[in-house]
Length: 157
Image 1 (tube, rainbow, N blue to C red):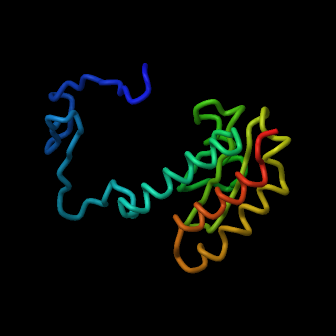
Image 2 (tube, rainbow, N blue to C red; image 1 turned 90 degrees about the horizontal axis):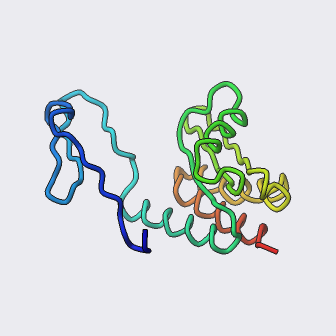
């Protein structure tokens, strides 16, 4: 695919849950029933755009495929983060910042091809950069700070 091309996936409307439609643009839109938990992240559009820009910038600067995971990491946060990294594109060339908000765990793991540059020291710098914003309830700002510091510390050779 050329840059800017998007893959189009055909969706059978009869396979969608009740209250769900495919819009003219191809986006799937779903109604939520009263009492149902929201399925969208608790972040604003601007926060998500800022995080996406920081991921892109960090990945290009360090030549590491950075990614973020927010959710339960299980009893062993590092093992949970490694399992999430294994599902990321190009895990050997990736680094994952994983945050479990409920247990307040942060785990940073890296793939085998970048482990020499995204090492324990770089991970600690990322955590140190993120914690002040996390303490103020600013999860996205903390993640962006971690990405910037880690990308600078892990600049490609």
